[in-house]
Length: 234
Image (cartoon, rainbow, N blue to C red; front, side, top):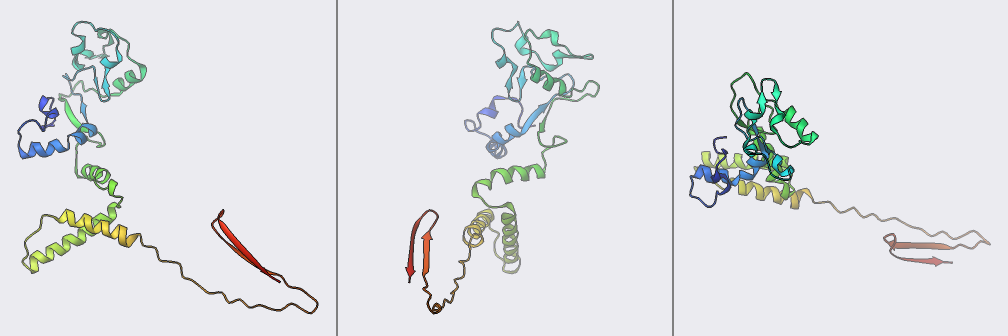
């Protein structure tokens, strides 16, 4: 919430000099924007015409009344509930139901705050971070997360032993090694299918009984449909 206040710098990260913390946060700005939302507090200063998926203003054709564009939530809420008389335009029913379903504290002195959408309490924790990383970081590689996690533990254990017993210097490219080994395992080891074992079928020709004729036939095809051939012996 500290770094996502409404200010112009959130839209121009790369154009201005900033600290390392702010520069790192700028790389995840798109994730922050899609995964967070504003929770209105008592006497909320959030603009009423602002929505997560756009603005109510985009649904209105024509000019608004004076100062109507700058209405805040606190201007639309009273002790009796929502005061729709201050709106000069009709609000679509589905949006109206969403607005009514949003909880607005009327007694507790709670300020407007940012919340993480998928979190029950609105806080962003390590579980949410893992879900974001699992969905975004490794999906394009086609590698299951359990494989990366297992190989990561193995590489970390080997690195630890080298530092403790061989006095080796800690390396900072652990993630590169883990991804390389996981990729090698998936595309070289895990996807190897053993060739089917060939077997020989012994065939013996038996002559027909006396005064009988025997017709032997056989054939094969390369697919269905496909090239085919056959033969007979009389």
